[in-house]
Image (tube, rainbow, N blue to C red; front, side):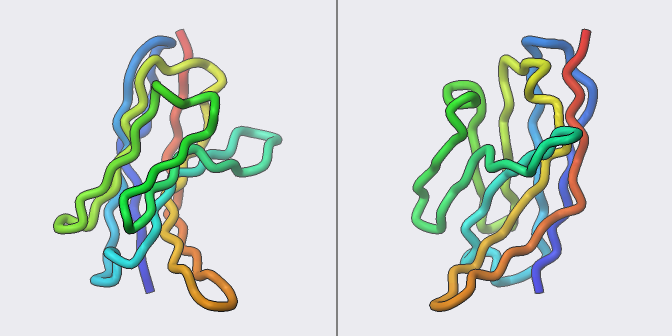
Amino acid sequence: QVQLVESGGGLVQPGGSLRLSCAASASIFGTCAMGWYRQAPGKQRESVATLTTGGSTSYKDSVKGRFTISRDNAKKMVYLQMNSLKPEDMAVYYCNCKIVRAIVDINYWGQGTQVTVSS
C-alpha cells in the first residue's frame, strides 16, 4: 500500500510559480513510476508530467518548458515545479504512483491539491 499526500497548491497570479510536493509513505516508493495529473471542473483527469524509475520524463505539450517533475527517492518525495502559470493550468493536481505489473499496473493516488491561477 502506498499513501500519497500532496501539498503546495494555492492561489497564484498568471505568470507566477508554484511548487507542488508529494510525500509517499511506503518503502516501495523506489519502484513507483511517479506522475502528476490534473483535473479541471467538467473535464477528465489528464496527465501533466511523468517520471519513470529510470529517470525518463514526459510532459503534456502545453506545459513543456514551464513545468518540471523531479523526485527524491531518499526522502520519498516527488515535486512539480510550475512556472509561468496560466489560467488554463488551474485544476486540482493529483500525485500518482504507478507500479508496473505483468498484467495489470497498480495505481495509487493522492487526495489532490487545488491550484488556482487568477489575477
